[in-house]
Length: 338
Image (tube, rainbow, N blue to C red; front, side, top):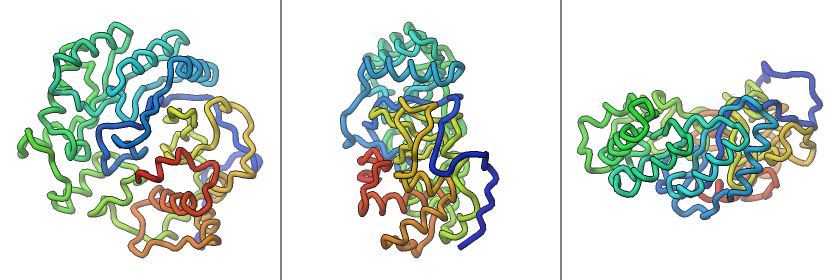
């Protein structure tokens, strides 16, 4: 079934897990979004539940972050954070009250053609202490938001925050749209397969969430056993890019959406994973263990293969969600909107 070369094992008990000191990450205010992008790791959608963190919840979240990671650097996002500017302001206020640094607020820039409404909102963010806004720029977003709108958002942020206040992710894509009609969305399927794969590489894309299911494929598809070489300890225990979502779930630093080893209130505590078979398998054996576990319940390998080990993991977890409804597989809507 493959060789498990465990590069990351430390001395620990196989039925226990502890999230260490927080280094940096994000707070997901909501999964509600204007888009349903094909690459989205967290499966954002305009149809997701309109659930947002409340001011009281934000105060508690940032209090925990400060305690568990005194020097952690955070960002604020969604979903689409700009759908609820008041929630963003509450998050900025809570972070300031607890002395947590917020490096940026993330947006897809859907509001870029409405300066009359959003210039004052940006000014409020700036007055609250924010100094950078990340604007997502890519063909994945351009399927829903015209390049003209995106460029308008970048320009508006630069007017309010200064030129360096616009964190364009990824800046290389600004020139990508030059040959296209900037007033119309760009359909990825219209591009050559070679260009699509080059886009995926440039975006540093993790084939989790929806990315593994894109058609045409973003990556060369391979059999499950080609991803059996390591466990997932680094992804599950890393705290350099963790997230806390609007339901209070802790999302591991490997950007493993749809799986919650614990709630944010359990950070730093020893967590019993003996009744969390998905977490236990991934932590100790990686996707090999998860594949073997799911096979007992009828999971069958996809004939077309997988875009990466994260795609394999997501597909197995989708099967388990639909057939076993395990407690650690949450939020539910992640699997419903894949």
